[in-house]
Every structure is written in structure tokens, then in C-alpha cells.
Amino acid sequence: MATSFDYWNDCVDVQDMEAMWQEPEVSTEWLDAGETKGNKVHLSRDPDGEPYLTQTEMKAVADIIVRRHFDSQIQQDMICAVAELASDRQPLSTRWYDKKTKETALGIMQILPKTAEWLVRDLGYQAYEVEGNPDILYRPFVSVYFGAAYIKWLSKFEEEERSEEFVVRAYNGGTKKATHKSTLQYWKRYLSVKESLPSRRFVDEGPSLNNAHSSTAQAAPATQNTNAPSSEKTGVDYIYWDSKASPEEMQEMWSCSEVAKEWTKSGEKRGKVRFSHDRDMKPYLSRVEMKSVICALAEMVSMRFVNGVGPRIGLMGIDYSTAFWLYMELGYRAYRLDSAGDLTKPFVSMYFGAAYLAWLSEYEGRERTPQFVVPAYLSGPKNVNHQETGPLWLKFEQALSNYEDMKRDPGNCTIL
Image 1: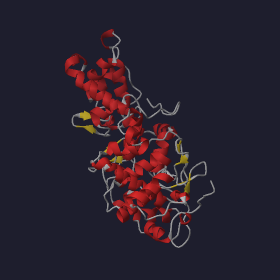
Image 2: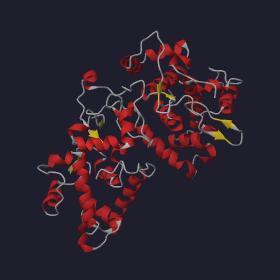
Image 3: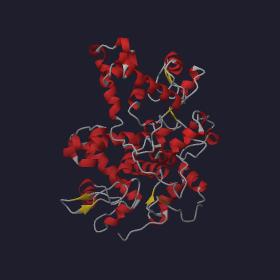
Image 4: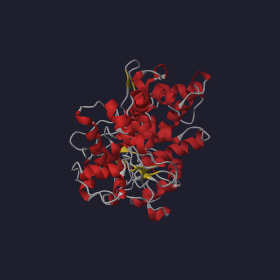
């Protein structure tokens, strides 16, 4: 591939560069990284030397394209999540190959040249000329333009209003496979990735469900990602992981490659890692930060909120009296338990939640099945009635499915 980009100026025109500088989050990120307006702006690079867009840059490109060409009728989050899955936001990506046409998909949105030509010729998307110039699809604004056009077409496929799930699965496998099991995992990954986006992670723009789909570690980008607003800039007091976990526990978390990548992409730094927060500023863990079979239980009882929900305390929703009994009577004393407030610490709550699960798994001296243990955890072992607790088990399986495609990085993420 002859095309190469060292700078943003190599892959966008003057108008687009000016539009990028006018995006407050982009200009802040670039200035913080030492870039200056009027000079060339470096593209970030991954450990393999491949250029990529930061999440802030990706969101800005999507915002500009949607405002400029689509009257804000397309979800920018959808574009950003698809770009994350398709190319890891790498403008020079060539990951997908069409065996039938012998064509390779190009760019951030992984568009086939024939698809772009069809969008120009038959649907009138003529902002960029593709025929005879397929390499133009490597340019971020061009790729996002045609990706958004294709998404818009899919959303009204056969003149029907299509769901987000149909659109995403069809984008991945074609309209014929939009309901086929082969695209289901892509949809699940898409939902996880969408939750990790900056616009959803922090309180100023929406509920902050942060997750990531990649399991490989990534070094800090050449252009430091500062999409996460600081307390000094926003006047918001965030709650930090470091206030709820010991230095050793934080080291374990940073040693988990998926967590490290998620935190790095979100602009977190060692010694000062924020929790995700919802609109009400309630802190909670992302699925990547949780990542365990017992995560599905935490999903059910606390929705991953650090302080718990309602009468259930902490991530695992375990009440203080049960935890104290485990501490005093069964000898689970890896963590001190002085008050109910200790159960709002993620590691402490997970520890006693896991201890309770271990006790339930051998309740009354019998080896118990998960179908018993899960309802017993939720409603008490004496209240397990399989007919009445069946819905709880189904709900648990549904929650568990959120983690099925998140493969554990061997040897790194064992925290209990």
C-alpha cells in the first residue's frame, strides 16, 4: 500500500482541518499534546507504528460529517462504535477482503470501493469522487461520509424503518445476515464498544457506561488522549478508583491489558483513575473493569454502581450482616470489615460476594448447581423455589451474555 499518513494535514483538506480545530475537545487535546495551530498536527500511532484517531478525534469527525451532510439524522455514537470495531480507528486499515469481488475494504469505516461508487452513482452521495480513486477512502472524512451514507441507507432498507440492531448487523455481514447468528456476536461487541465512547463515559454528555472490546494492551498514543474532562475544567468532583482500592489492587488492575487499554484511551493516569459516572454522578464499573462470571450477578443486583442500588450495598449487593458473618465465622479476612461503608469498595464487595457464592455452592454439605446458587444469592438459600426463581435464572443468563465475547487475558486479570 503506497498511501501513508504522518500528519492530519496529509489526509484532510484545509476546510476540514479548520473544522477540527474549532471542535473544543479536539483543540484542547491537540494543544495539550504540544500541537500548534498553523503547523502540521501529528497523528497518534499504536505500538506497531500504525496511525489512528483518538476517540476525541473520531467523535469530532463523525460530528462534523453528520452535521454537514446528514442534518444530524444519524447517531454519531453508532459511527464511532462501528469504526472502533471495523478498524480500531486506523485510517489505513485494510482488514476485510471480499472473496467474491476480490476487493479489499478501506479506511476507518472499512468501505469497499464498489460500495462507495454505488452510493455516488445510485444514491447521489457525491461530496467525494471515488471512481478511479479508491485510495481516497483512506481519508477519515471521506470514509466516515460513505460509512454514514451506507448506515442511512440500511436504516431505511426496503423502505422500512430498521432497528439499530438490524443496521449494525447488516453493516457487518450484509442485509441477508442481519438476523443470522453469525452477526450476533458483532452486535454484542458493538453494544460494549458503544458504552466505552467518550460521549457516554462522562456526565457532561450522557450516561457513562464504559467498556472496550480489544484484549491487547496499547501504549499511550503520541497525541495524549484527554477526552475525559478533568475536575478542574468542569467543576465536577469525580470519585476515583484510587480512593477505593489499595496500591497493590490498582497495580493488578493496570496489569490487566484490557483495563489498561480502556483507561489509557479514556485519558486516565496512574494514581488518578476516575470511575465512570452516570448523569446523577453515581460512580460505577465498566464491564471491562468487572470481567468475571460473578459480574453477571453484579449486573443484576447493582447495575455495577459502586455504592449499590437501594438496600443492596456495593457492587455485589451483599448486606453487611452477611459479610460480617463471613468475616467472623468463616474466616474470610483478606479485608477488614469495620462498617457497611467498606462494602462500597469494589475489591471488598467482590471478595465477600465471591465468598458467599463459595459457601452457597456447598450449602448444607451438598454440591449445588448454578441454578440453585444464583437464586440463593439473590433471595436467600431457604427461598429457592425453581418455579418462582426461574425468571431470576433467565435474567442472570441474559446478564451473563454481556460478557461472553470478552475473553480473559490469561494470567493478568485474576483479582479475587
